[in-house]
Length: 542
Image (tube, rainbow, N blue to C red; front, side):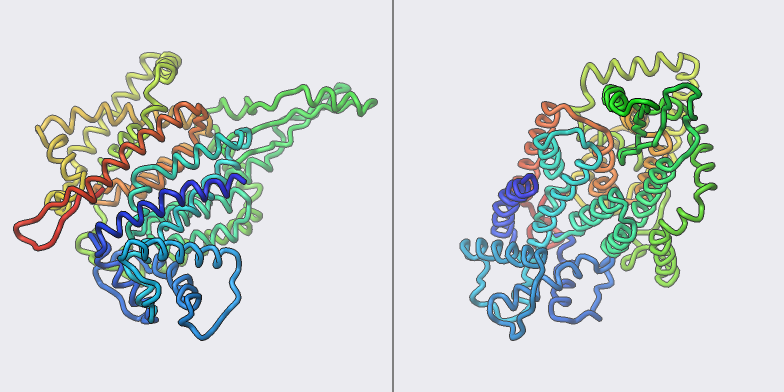
């Protein structure tokens, strides 16, 4: 019931806003001028055609090819009728519903359809992301169910809906970009991993890489989290047998959030009934011997477990290894990671990017983080480590931050020249308003990351937090261009594993997202402007 309700809620705004966007902006805009013609070539069956300006693989166009053919036949043009499974039927009906609604507003007509290309108009292509947004919300709901099984259904639905409203994800639902498909594939890969279906997870992960190359990092991250979960689920010898009449066993029950929930099972030698009574009265709590250990201790424990289970783990997680090897072969064959426009997307050490992500994420979760309770929690953390330790760590972090913004703060030509993007104004009006601003922002960046690491560290193993930070850095640091949509996938992993459960704060976050979404969409649709040096209408976009 929860999934059906979620699909209905997300579909309600997807259909309405899709109709509005296609009514006001019927022609391809921004990156769509590359993606839409390429997808239309695929619709015609011309799979050898390729635009050299496209930097990502053709995964998004592959998503389109099967549904478009099904719609084409369902409206009576095709001569072949094939059986469709439930997912294909859902996609078919959803595409048709969008097309029917669009036809009511006069910018698309199903009756005039006579070829595949007619069903691959800008309006229908954009609806691909509408379908994927609905599927993504359902996947998020299932991920939340696995990570937070104690939540009731209403709270899980609330969190899934709010995450679906996240501005960077929401906005690009209505344009033919790769972002929604990329997020959906990565979340589906992660869900399959949580269900311990590693072959399916790796297969979906391979498809996510075909949508966007940088998803190979998230394939490796999901593999690492799966290995951690598996090895710690099978660790032995944490609690030995007691020599008394009561025997305490530790089955090392691990959940997928990254914390060990160790149940205490008490066995009486003479009375089975008393066993159940005692066992049910004992709470499930994290194992203190592991949860309270430091990072070095965790790494040592993990390495020891990996050594004892090396062959099992190698076999079990070999699908991810195959995906990684295939990606390396692709990079060698292609001569780089990006496909086209390589001169504008060269790998550049952009360490300031990871600092920007910390601040943007905190602002996007302002109702969660900006609270008295969280501030007191941080003060307690600093007091616990002592002033000397905090001073040393803070000093090292400040030096690293200053070096990052001084030597590794990249101003990409696109950032400096394209005033259609919001980062253009943030860069010129804030960061570069004065030479000292970028340095004065460093403490704010570091405080943002301190809050993130502290929140994750309360509910995740330290080694998990380290893996998350490294994965996020591996995705963002090589990117020379400041694009907030690059932050989407690491942001979702952050939120899903931070264990925010206060419904009031989730509701306030949803209100914040709705306000931002209304503003950005109104600016995009109803505040167009013109360039003197180039014809056509320009619009504000993320």
